[in-house]
Length: 183
Image 1 (tube, rainbow, N blue to C red):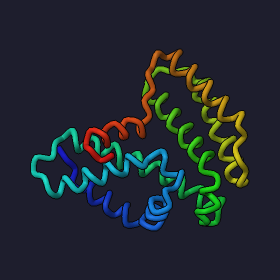
Image 2 (tube, rainbow, N blue to C red; image 1 turned 90 degrees about the horizontal axis):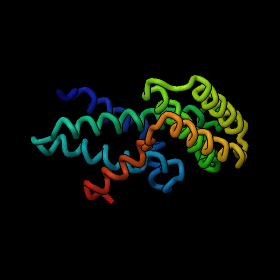
Image 3 (cartoon, one colour; image 1 turned 90 degrees about the vertical axis):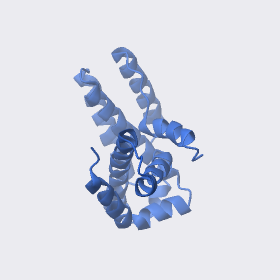
Image 4 (cartoon, one colour; image 1 turned 45 degrees about the vertical axis):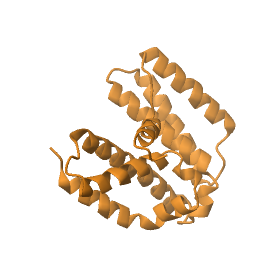
């Protein structure tokens, strides 16, 4: 069963965040790397809901996943933008690689939590990485390359140890966008 309120919430969220989203899209911002295709698919499905009476439960589930993913991604970006960058999106954009690493680290945490059984030390390590990255970003510093390497190694080992194939939401939505002919 579709929750029509979710679509109204999406429309309101898009209006409330129009300035930031418009800037990111118009400037082909690197901050969009993590959710560019999520936006495309979610917008497409929103438009289909209005125009297509055969809109399926599967499409609704994809829409819901995409919306909540974008919501959390943009929430992190705007919190950082307000807290550390005095709403200067150009300054934040200069740290896009670090912001994307922060968002990936949070995604890894969420993946561990959704996997059910995991090693608490792995989760704690990801939280420590998140704090370290956030600390650099809040000081408007570039995140050291060594942090990227450590997170890459740690995440690979974690998911291998758990025997989990990790597929980021943004990669899944890239495939969906391709299937829908959006790219």
